[in-house]
Length: 128
Image (cartoon, rainbow, N blue to C red; front, side):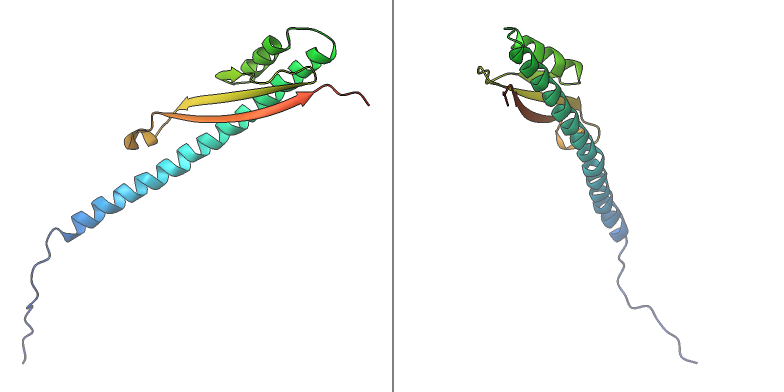
């Protein structure tokens, strides 16, 4: 009867290194999925806030009021924007830039503390 001997060298600890690398990759993918979805949600909120502010400001401009900028900022803030600017205010158009910021969840591991998204909308008063 022939005996088989195991002449292989020992590979102890090899699995531990692979598990550590895979855990890092899995955490990075979860961070991308969760925080990436949160950024997309912030972008949608910022666009809705910018649209609301631009439409409200344009309506005030159409009726001849001079407070279109403050009304646009108020409407955008009420619709979820954390920071609002009105860079262009002409006699026929108003532009609103809305920014939404939220704290990150998993991305803090990689040094990203806040997730920021911004959007811009322009509305005007035109006669037919």
